[in-house]
Image (cartoon, rainbow, N blue to C red; front, side):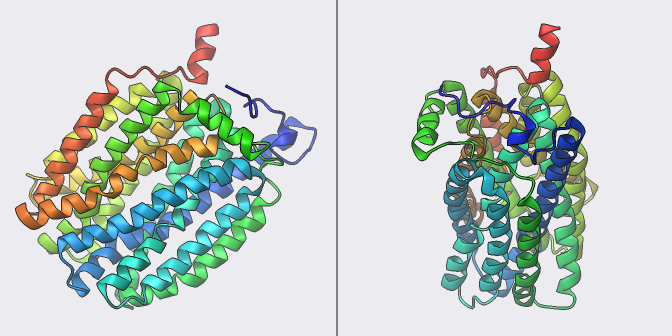
Length: 422
C-alpha cells in the first residue's frame, strides 16, 4: 500500500509550528474540543428532528407508516451519498477541514428551514433529501482530523467525538420539547436557520488556524490509488459489510421507536424527550468506557458483545409494556448502540493503518446505505403486522451482524502492540 502520510508525522505538519511539545499538545487539545463541540451542535439539530419533530410531522400531515418510513429513507439516501463525497473532501483537502465543518452546520440550518415550509408529502419528501446532506458532511473530515492527531489513542479520541454527539442528542429533544410548548414544528424548523449558520461560521473561524497544514493526499490520483489498495483488503471489506448489516437493524428500531412511544403508547412529547434523553445520557457515559476498552483489549472485545446486546434489546421491545421495563430497555439500547458505531470506525482505521482516514470514516458511514432502505421495509411490516414487527425485524438483522463478527480477526491496537513489544 502506497504511503500517503505517516501517523507519526511531526506536529508542525498537523498543527501550528511551535517548536515545543507542550504547545503542540495544547493545539491538539483545542482541535479536539472544537471538533467535539461542533459535533454536539450538529446532534442538537439532528436529535430534535428525529425524536420529536418527525413524529409531529407524521401526525400533523396524517402520513401512513409507509410514507413516514420513506421520509427516513429519503434523508438517509442523500446522507449516504454526501458522506462518500465528504470522505474524499476530508482527505484530499484536509487542510480545509474547518471550512467543510462550517458548511456542514450551515447547510443543516438551511435544509431544516426548507422542511419547515413543506405543506404536502411530496414537498416534504424532497425537503428530507436535503435534510440528509448537511449533517453528513461533518463526520468524515472531523473524525479524520482526530485520527490523524491522536494515532496513539484513536479509540478514545473517536469516543470523545461520540460523546459530543451524545451530549447533543441529550439536549436536542429537551430543547425541542420546550419549544413545542411555544411554537409549532414548522416554526421550530424555520427558526433553526440562524443558529446553525452562526455555529458554522464560528467553527470555521476557529479551525482555520489549528487544522492540518497540508492535504493528506497529495493528488487525486494518489488518493484513488490508496483507495484501490484498501478495498482489496478482505478484512476491511467484511468489516464494512458487518457495519452495514448492523446499521440496517438499528435504523429500523431507532426510526420507529419514537413513533411507538408517541403514537401507539400516547406518550406526551415531553415524556418521549425524557426517555430518549436518558438513552443518550447512557451512551454519553459508555462512550469513553468503550473507547478505552477497545484501545486496551482490542476492538472485537467491545464490538461483539455490544452488537449482540443491541440485537437482544431490539427484540425485547416487541414484548415490553409501557412501564419501567420499557424505560430500562430504551436506556440500555443507548448505552450499547451509540458507542458501537464509533468503535467500527476505530477498527476500520486500524485496518487502514493511518491512510485516508476521512475516507475510511466515509466507508463505515457509507455502509449505512443498506440501512437507508430498512425504515421503508419496516414501515411495510408495520402497516401490515403492527408496530412490534419493526422491532422483531430490526433485532433479527442486528443478530445476524453479531454472528458475522464471530470469525473476523481484527488487527491489534497501538496499545496492544506496545504491550506485546514491552
